[in-house]
Amino acid sequence: MLERSLTVDVLKVVAAQFIVWHHFSAYGPMADTMSLVWPNFVNWLYEDARLAVQVFLVVGGYLAGQSVISKPIEQPLILIVRRYLRLAPFYVLALTLITFAVTMSHTIIHSDWLPTAPTWWQFLAHALLVHDLFGFEALSSGAWYVAIDFQLYALLMLLCHALQNSNHRRLSMGVALLCIASVWQFNRDKSLDIWALYFFGAYGLGILAAWAKRSSTDAAVFWLTTVLTIGALFFEFRSRLCLAVITAVWLVIKPKGMVHWTPMKRVLHRLSNSAYVLFLTHFGVIVLFSDMWNKSHFYDPDTAFALTGFAWLCCVGVGLFLHEKAEVPIHHWVAQKTKPWFSRAVR
Image (tube, rainbow, N blue to C red; front, side, top):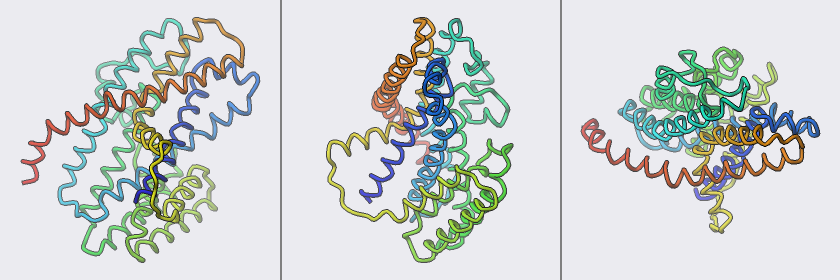
């Protein structure tokens, strides 16, 4: 289990950095300056680095699958509410900070990528994770993923409640069928990318990967689903699904083993734990550095690259700091305050 946790840590940390660099290439004037000298590099960050989201989807499914691997889901709504309370408090705090940064930068940055000042309804829709469903403009680059992650988890809990039985075969087959339906049909319709079904192919592969070593039947279900997913790629190739398949297969075939927790591996573990905060807050750092760039009137591509690298390190540092000083305390406080309510609800 320790080796598998290290593998997940590495996947999350690497994927998070690719996402941050993708957003540096998509937003802000520094990317435009860098592209004068390194157009292929900036274009690769913009077009391909964003595929790292698929790693998060697979890993998210893998961890969710592990959490329900050996227990019946008798009260799915309680688990869904708990998941919301796990995601939403810091998410709302991050949106508040980013909105403040955006408001302060509007006089300097005049670009389409900068969100407009939000209305109260828009902010409420974000807080409830339904902003995309109601057509509101996103307040941050990571807002859509939080909403999709919540949808996917809720869908899994409902599937577990409806299909789980003593031998788990019906549940495994249900997840596999929905996964196959996603890759063959739903994932091919871009208009569905605000719904969990669009992303369930990657998420479902992660779930099945978590269950694959539980029994020979679960392993067979995983490999059959993988083969059918590859078949869907031959029918209509999607690089995002190709990466999802590779990630899921690696999680299954990676051998277990004991891990000696060296200082470097402990750093990886901390970076992995802070990936959610990094995902939510780095857009605000991009806004602030873009504001600084415009005020400074820099035009040199080397300076743009150096400042982007420094901004990236600041994103990582802010993520670590806010994870330990804000997200963890907020989570503990919310868990403590809601514990009596959940205790009464499960009786």
